[in-house]
Amino acid sequence: MLISVLIAVVGLSLLVTVMRSGAMRAAPGWRTLAFVAFCALPVLFAASAIQANLSYMKRVAFCGSCHIMQNHVASLTYDDDEPLSSVHYRNNFVQQDHACYACHVSYAMFGGVRAKTNGMRHVWAYATKGDKAKVELYEPYDNANCLHCHGTSQRFAEVAEHTEEDNFMARVGSGQLSCLNAGCHDEGHYWDGKYDGASDDASPSESDSTATGGDDDVD
Amino acid sequence: MSTSPVRPAGRLRGAAACLVVGYAALLASFVIRHPFALTALIPLGSLAVGLGIVLWLRAVVAEMRAKGMV
Image (cartoon, rainbow over all chains, first blue to last red; front, side, top):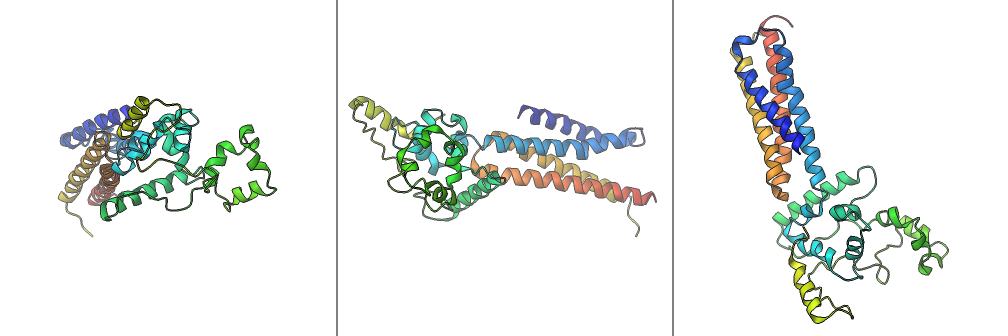
């Protein structure tokens, strides 16, 4: 971002210089200067600014800046081993700063583009539709996002349910069987903010503090 | 087709104005990081920069035509 700002400062200065250099237009190098001011630096600045913004959009802080996502983001830090989001976040199974992006963006070639498109659809739906209770995925969760990390891991292979059925991996790979099926890994987030910190060994005071912490921003 | 000598300068000012708007919108996107704002500012800034470059190119071509270079 700092580089983008520096490019903008240089670009704007050069633009003003070129616009005010009426008498110097015949001078050698003026055309090159005009090209840099009117074309090269603006293109460079726009590209770097878009890149900086896209990079920022991968951060959990950005996802949590939508009001409707705040419970999802808060659920990352719940001291509970049931929701997948919390397990992955607290144990650093995904990069904490990019936790949402790691699990919700397809690893395919245009995964990032599709995620941005869906994000804009969410923004539009939030602004135009009355029902703002819950954000739904536009398509079933892609098992490939889980298998990207878990598919070849020893820990995954050692789970009896993953190997007892002959064509289990084929069904998971083709999407016939979802990792998020009921009875498997069906608790992604405590999105509704109902977290009660009800682990058996937690003291009441710890539970209370964790539960109220659910409304706080992660960052 | 003849071209008025005033028009290239006007286009140049238009190009500069578009580029300034583009710079401003994209710089604002670093400060206002609300999703709604980013959804508007990034396309707006990119379009303004693109339009500025197109207008500058048109000004260059118009000036060359005025001088009989093309």
